[in-house]
Image 1 (cartoon, each protein chain N blue to C red):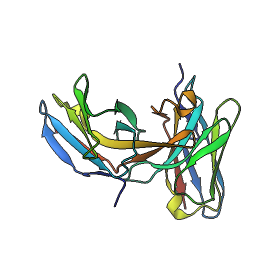
Image 2 (image 1 turned 180 degrees about the vertical axis):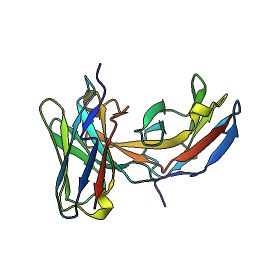
Image 3 (image 1 turned 90 degrees about the vertical axis):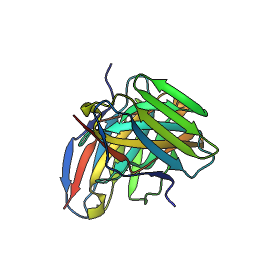
Length: 113
Length: 114
């Protein structure tokens, strides 16, 4: 079983729609959860971080966390063509004074104009 | 305020050679993590450095080693290169000795092993 799983997509949505990206993780001791956006040939860019159960909103982005179900999601409202990218779910666990980050393989999102 | 920088941008090596990649963290950050990202995959955690010591390590062989300098910059060394080591190598930095685990990534080094 992969430690962090995401649907590889591609997920295709029309401009202005809501894009919903999902992620599950296996380590119940995980404490921090992140969504990164990665354009082709570029490095990951942090979009959202979430640490406690519930929703966290930042502009057009909403992250949702359910630790009991080991589930993290990202909603993108009013999707724009510039949102077309790969979205990476990342999960941190702590130990030895530091932390270790496990990434999912990413979901490719296409927003059609 | 400079972000995370990495050098070189691209590198071509042959099997069996050794390579050193370099990273300078974002200003104010003292913790550096290294990742390997193969094409079409998510980044894979290699290791994390703080106070010049390796604190966490992923599932990578001993051919992968690192170092952190007093100015918090870091190097990733890979010995006895294999074709499968071809990937984008990413460096990420974070502040406060890792107590704050929000990371910022550099642009990466694209390594091609022939």
